Image: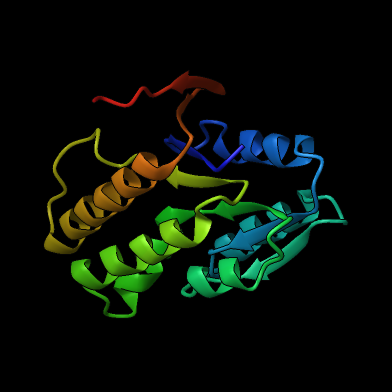
Length: 171
């Protein structure tokens, strides 16, 4: 199974579903984490996520260099990338523009070709138009990144209240 893309809102079941897919893969798992602890609450979230992972899983912290993390991982590993949302936010925070982020996303998608895994991201385009330029830029860039990954994924699932809705490709 090539990679699966899991999209959804906060607390929709994305991470739990991704962990189940990884555990059920029967392969060694590499967890590529993009979160950074900018405050105490986020540090606690990260700690809870780490504690919930099986000890046999290998974790790679890659808040900016997801491509390098993918390329450094054994081709037999099942990859769990959690999540594109934070990765895009981190890149924007470092001054990357939409064109740079799109190129980085294209490179990661290419590196995932033929790899087994699951990629987690948030769906942020279903709400109101954000009131400030940075928030609008984030929403637009993440939407483009999500669309790129969805186009390359074997399956794209929208998580809602712990349930998965299969997203069919439009040809």
